[in-house]
Image (cartoon, rainbow, N blue to C red):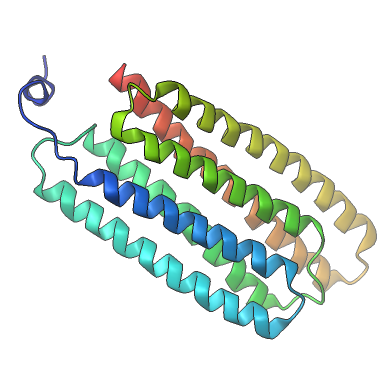
Length: 216
């Protein structure tokens, strides 16, 4: 048996990670809320204000990520594998970065109008963030909460499938109806980033499922 796994049976685990996980997940929800607000506004000034808020939330996420990595360096026995902690916090950070990237592109490109599918995609990103937060909250007792975590992960997978359909429908309508080439390119890029963000939320749930498998 691996000595590190052997020791885990006898040495108390470091539970200081769980508040960091929960803080990170709640911070993700805040970013997703702001993204929804951005997508329903047609005011460029409001877009700029919300984008700054999202950037601040993304900075908070970076701080949480750094704290988690520092805690990893200090901890002898972790609640689950170090590489899984590293990947979990890193994947959440990727989603935050994508949300920030979407808002920055909107401010940079300044499309004449935000196409309706953006609101639907932002709503799915928010729903995915809520499911991630629910699953992360259950990590404190992952074995007892296995079913709850699994259900939340399955919901994110369903959200990802719905986002794929929205992306193809939105892209099809965009290429069919938009006659201005510049606007077409701007909106298509933003749509791609929204779809990628949902994919990255599924990446978070993939590592959560990996943690469950290892703890079984």
